[in-house]
Length: 278
Length: 278
Image 1 (tube, one colour):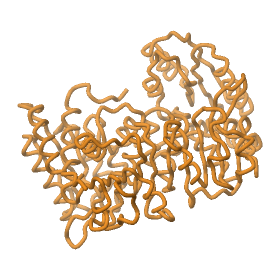
Image 2 (cartoon, chains in turn green, cyan; image 1 turned 120 degrees about the vertical axis):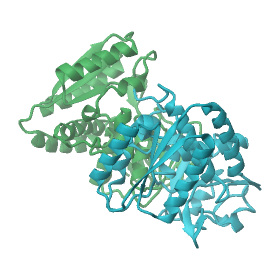
Image 3 (cartoon, one colour; image 1 turned 90 degrees about the horizontal axis):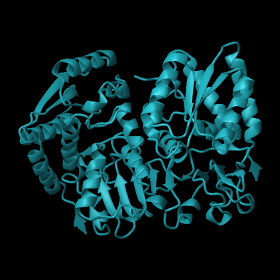
Image 4 (cartoon, helix red, strand yellow; image 1 turned 60 degrees about the vertical axis):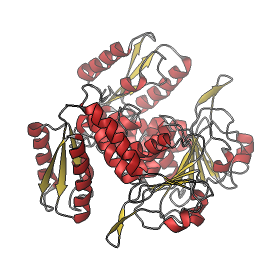
């Protein structure tokens, strides 16, 4: 079994990005609500990468009780006045907020996370120059390790905004045959055990166990949740690792690569005329 | 086996639409390239429904050799000058044209077919008040016949723009477990025979045969192709009909319902503030 080393691949891609960016001064704004420690950890990861790349990273903190309209106004002000090359809205947002409506306030040419309806649509119709960060991370692993994802069957566990949906859209565009299941699917193993490649993003620690998969499957764990104060994926490492051909660990797998992909998107979008909005 | 009667259900929905529209004067523009007889047939079907509903249906014919930019200009003129409540671009377009770029020139508030990137994105993020016509047609059958599509597994054959992709997006939004395969999938039967509901839209007459499915499956045939001068679906009727619990015929199944759904979308979009573009 090969452990897919996200830290090493992230460092390699980062080095390439750094030379591509060169002397250019890119800027990335991060909108953060409240003071959730998990969210803070994600922001710190992005801040560190920004520093390595010389990207001007600005955090815009607002109180968690802000209204949807007020937050939309603040984002419009950031777009208009600071005019950064990219904007991220750190998820999850507090419950009272209309998350999608807020994500839609990020203009497509600054939407490095590709979570606005505009960016999602451009991607779905095959008119986007960038990839959703988690898709970019998964594809980078496939390329680096020479994993053929086109000829087998892919099973996606979870249909969420950050993992399942963008991955499914990508697979449909790539004409790869795939299945989407989630925790409510009756007899989920019936599907997961058909997977040549299993991509999981439901946020349930230990949900994917070795008995649910076939021998020599490729297991990509994009789950992010907390278990006992530590970042956890969806995969039960002890039972999955003896059966898998390849496995992404958590932490140190898809996570660090996803962060790097945000900056790759920032670079691509900052190049004039790079994004399609036709 | 129950044959799902698209003509009867279309007539029923049409009657409801007619009374909802009442005296209102709605208008629908259809952009048609060249003089392909199959395309002409589709336009005639829409024209007939428009007439029944008292919708002002205008066909804008252009020569097949038109350029992408010229056609975009013509569409912009229609939007600006005629300002219809809805616009359809009859597909397929001639090969020299950039189809998606042309579809994107339809403003979302007039996009009854939901094929622009904007409309696709709004739908994917769950912010659309209307459904892609083929999805509306399939859902109408499920509702009319009391077919539970949520608890079983759905298999979608084909990942095209008009059927497979919008159906997959809808299923992901509805949290239904599903599989997408196409004609290139090795051992496609391995997946189709797991389907409680089989939705097919690849445009290959007779592609789906009885040995590929399980007993008592629901078979929704959204394939449209021509065989011997007649409209054909994807299903081999003789082998599928003895095994299926429900089957949509071609013609007279999903087709006529899809046409009606275009007009339902027209009505919804014409109601001020009905579509989301936030």
